[in-house]
Structure formats: structure tokens, C-alpha cells
Picture: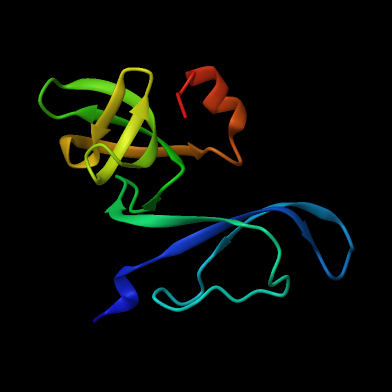
Length: 129
């Protein structure tokens, strides 16, 4: 099986930089897709997010936890939501207060942030978790 199509990223709430000793939140991305996460603070709590297999209109990887703006293909209606794995549909979806819209029903997807680094955006959009 070709594992290169599986990508992950991790959110570390209190990463400490070795050289400066400064502690701050940080997003980690896999160096080798399909491999394992390896970083100097092994064993510390992180939140893992999976790649959806999709790219946005700017060729960026769309990950679980991203906040996206897109058009719903059937209605040509713009929507903004958080990328989640929907347990109802067992598929990737964009979630907002209106419910889940499956990602394959969207076009012109653009990543506008993520739920960790842009929490203020999440609050403004009132996206249900």
C-alpha cells in the first residue's frame, strides 16, 4: 500500500523552543508523508489532524480542522465551515450551524484559517463543534 497519500499535522499547545526557551503554540507538519511524526518533544499531548486528500484552489492541502470558504455546487451558494470527518455520513464535510455539507459537493474551496491558529475567526463564524 502506498502510504504517501496519507498526511497528518499536529497542534501542540505548549511547544518549548530549545534555543530560546520560549513556550508557545505551534502547528507541526509531517516531514515525510506516510511516515511517523518525529519531533524533539515526543510524548507531549498533541491534537492530530488528517489530510482530506483534497487541495484548495491555491493548491494547499485541506486538513481536518481547517476553516474553508467554498461554493455549494448544486445551488451556487457560498458557505464557510470547519472541515470535519462526519460520523453521520462517514465522509469529510464542512460543518457550520446549518449542518454538514460533504466536501465533494463543494467547489472553489479556499482555506481561510484553522480552528487552532484562528480561533477568533471560528467564533465570528459561530461554527458549531
